[in-house]
Length: 215
Ligand SMILES: CC(C)(COP(=O)(O)OP(=O)(O)OC[C@H]1O[C@@H](n2cnc3c(N)ncnc32)[C@H](O)[C@@H]1OP(=O)(O)O)[C@@H](O)C(=O)NCCC(=O)NCCS
Image 1 (tube, rainbow, N blue to C red):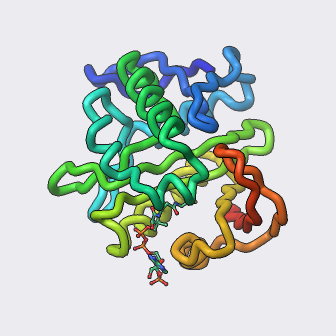
Image 2 (cartoon, protein in one colour):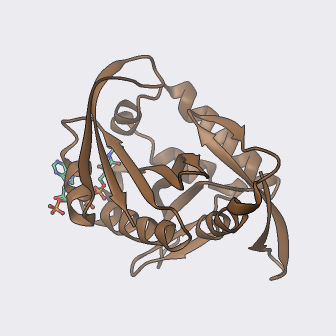
C-alpha cells in the first residue's frame, strides 16, 4: 500500500508504505490504494508517525527500539495477546525491518514524553479501507502498568483514528481482562459482540468480548 504525505526526516513529504501488521507477520497492504481511500491511508501514516499526549509520545518504531520494546514483553503480555516467544521475536524483527526501510507501519511505540523510555506498544490491524474500520490493540510493560498510560494512549489513538476518517474501531479482549474492559468503558466503547470461540495466534481458543467505538 503506497501513499504520499507523511513528513520525512528532512521535513519534506516522502512516499510511505503502510504495512499492515497481522499476527506477527508483515502483511503489506494492497499495492494500489483505491482513490477513495488515499486520504485515509495518508492519515493513518501520519497518526502512526507521531502522536503526543500529556505524558506520552506515540511514535513510529526505530531500529534502535528492539531492546526497549523487548523489556515490555513479559509473560502476561504474551499470554493476553496469545503470543509465543517466537511471535514476540517476529514482531521485533518485523518492526526493525520496517523501521530500517523507513516504512510507516500501523504500530507505534508508546514512550514517556519526558524520559523517552519505551513503555509499551499500540497498533491497529485488520484495517478495512472500505468500511473504514480497524482493530486497536496495545500493551504496557510491567514497569509502567497501573498508572493510566494505557488509557491515555488508547484515548489519543482512538481520537486520532476517527479524526483521519476511521469510523469504527474494534477492541477485542478476553472476558477476564478487567483493565481492557475498564479502558473500553472509559473511552465510551460499546460491547457489541461476545464470541465463544476466538482463536489466538498461539492456537489457544478462548472466549472474547468485542467493543466498538464509533466516531
Ligand atoms: C491491559 C493493559 C494495557 C492496561 O494498561 P495500564 O496502563 O496498566 O492501564 P491503566 O492504568 O490505564 O488502567 C486502566 C483501567 O484498568 C484498571 N486496571 C489496571 N490494571 C488492572 C488490573 N491488573 N486488574 C484490574 N484492573 C486494572 C485501572 O484501575 C483502570 O480502571 P479505571 O479507569 O476504572 O480506574 C496492561 O495491563 C497490559 O499491557 N496488560 C498485558 C497486555 C494486554 O492485556 N493487552 C491488552 C490486549 S487488548
